[in-house]
Image 1 (cartoon, chains in turn yellow, blue):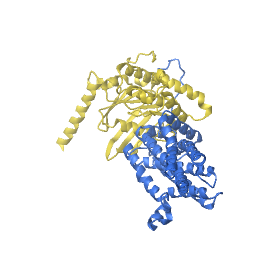
Image 2 (tube, rainbow over the protein chains, first blue to last red):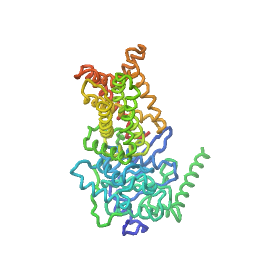
Image 3 (tube, each protein chain N blue to C red):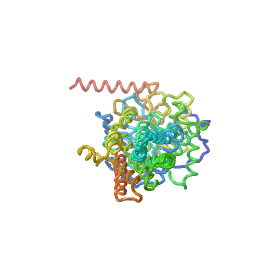
Image 4 (tube, rainbow over the protein chains, first blue to last red):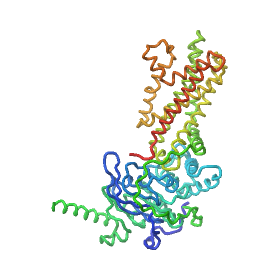
Amino acid sequence: MMNYTGNPSSRPPGEQTRTPAAPAVRAEDLHVVRGPRTVLRDLAFTVPRGRITGLLGPSGCGKSTLMRAIAGTQAKVTGTLDVLGRPAGHPTLRTRIGYVTQAPSVFDDLTVRQNLAYFAAILAPGRAAADRRREDVTRAVADVDLTTHADALAGNLSGGQRSRVSLAVALLGAPELLVLDEPTVGLDPVLRRDLWALFHSLAADRGTTLLVSSHVMDEAERCHRLLLMRDGRILAEDTPEALRVRTGSETVEEAFLHLVDEATAAARTKETTR
Amino acid sequence: MSTPAAPAPHQPSPHQSSPHQQSPLSPVAPTRALSPIRTTATAARVLRQLAHDPRTIALLMLIPCVMLLLLRYVFDGSPRTFDTIGASLLGIFPLITMFLVTSIATLRERTSGTLERLLAMPLGKGDLIAGYALAFGALAIVQSALATGLAVWFLGLDVTGSPWLLLLVALLDALLGTALGLFVSAFAASEFQAVQFMPAVIFPQLLLCGLFTPRTDMHPALEAISDVLPMSYAVDGMNEVLRHTDMTTAFVRDTLIVAGCALLVLTLGAATLKRRTH
């Protein structure tokens, strides 16, 4: 069972105290063209190491494209995008990043354990690593609370269970950076709380950097730091606390709406003065 | 969640030396040599997937045998015709079945997101392609052994040469089918489209390979086309084994052409795998 003992709802510790100097992700002048349109324009932001950074914004604002760019699976990326000190998509990053797409990407006709065993073999091949792989798989299955379903076919699991199998694959090999695209979508409140507890324990105990996207604003309070996105641009980049204080809002949702209104007003005045 | 006492298996290194220069994004990873361990892991995974689907395995193994049995009694009165057509079919079956199975399997890999995930991991494109070829090649060996054994020992298929050579050609045909399936799956957006590639890619070859009428009897234009289609050489190779006791130069040439085509198409298939999506 998920037996994380920490209290996930407690406010994350002070932002400045633990952030190492070099960020896990650094973007500058970042543009991404996907299909016929420019999805991301002129982004500049950083993701600090060992922290949980929430990427929030309405659906269609470019969150998934940004995550794909960071994971190195997006074409037509221009500008600077450094991930763990290398340009995004660098071959050496492939074992250092765990990336979970929005739709679960696992083999439906394999059991949970067979899925994980295969991906583990790709990450750390060879007979010498067999014992380590077995431990890794067992741990990842336990991390997402699927131990009792380890020998069930992934295709026979519920939607929420399948997305947890997909998450477990990303936990294999203890990557330094986890890029999670809406990992809690469609999960019940208990599971959501447990997953956030897992994310916090990963950051606190293993020093993992997490970038978690969501379009549900109430998840924002659980992050150490937030990137608010809208229409392919970053609206704000700060701690949830600072965002609320700056905008004089009660919740991050209010703060986001406040920032959107501000941006719209600014655009309008620019138009009228022209 | 894992017990909090679990030791952190990995501590992130503080950070690498100054990455702060303006660096253009590297668009492609350097092509890596084939990794035999990852290739066999992939092949084992593909076979494990099939193992959860016994009906598909049964169909793969039984259908060629049933067709040969049927054919034997269709040509009950003319055993010579059964020899020619039977031997040709021993080469055509593995090609068609492996084409179908591979095109659907790799299409599923593309649409389920597992391909994107695997290519974001340290898996070479060659590893994936070779893994598929290895898994379906193994399957084809069993399929061809069953069909060849049945035809030669129970249905009285009269081969002058060694049945082992029949098996060799059948295996190469299976690899060719796997290669073609892999390649066309890149151009199919759905299973409906993938299945339609079967008549589009396989039927013309079936008509022109010399199964129905010798290739030399065709209209010169069609004969020329059949000269560049790989299945023609698969059938020619089978007929060489049928008629000659030893490996003829024609047989060697035919098998080399089929093997070369399979390799070429496999390489083209690898080129359709993209680490980055547009």
